Length: 107
Image (cartoon, rainbow, N blue to C red; front, side, top):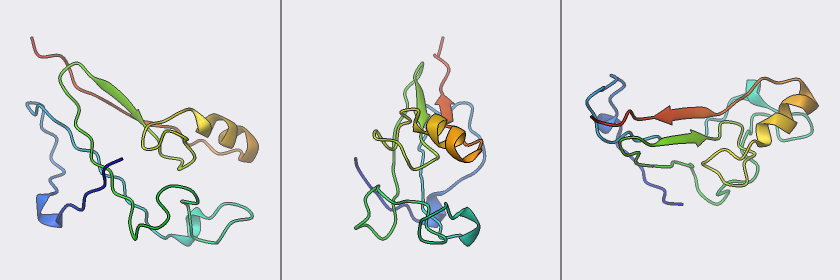
């Protein structure tokens, strides 16, 4: 895993259909409403890069590629999804799923 901090000025939320690369950044936000049972209230990440003050992941996606990213923080292949959310959803009645990102193949 490669972790990089991006300055806020480099963030542009405007979709770019002509872009060749998409950068995905995931950040932990301490929010008490996201607490899980039997865990520290407010903490959602209990296993990924715990020594880091913030987990931020950059990834490049090329034309024609598709990647599936974890949003439940339970994946053994984080930041990519391994389907761990399925058991989590069944156990606690949640509906979390992955982020799926694809880039059309340029013709």
